[in-house]
Length: 70
View (cartoon, rainbow, N blue to C red):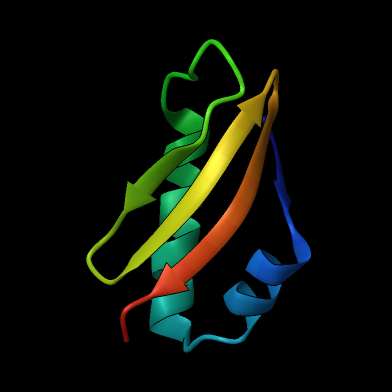
């Protein structure tokens, strides 16, 4: 499974504190292991403080948005 982050999501990922960074990476890992929707639909996953919005295209997960409430 390949993961691609759009530039805005990558900027957020690399600009947050280590503990929040870890939570986002955990969410991305969970998404890569979850069953994939049949079509390229938007989906979201939420952690304790963070979330990400993504879509999947075959074997590619495209992370469109990342955010944290801290």
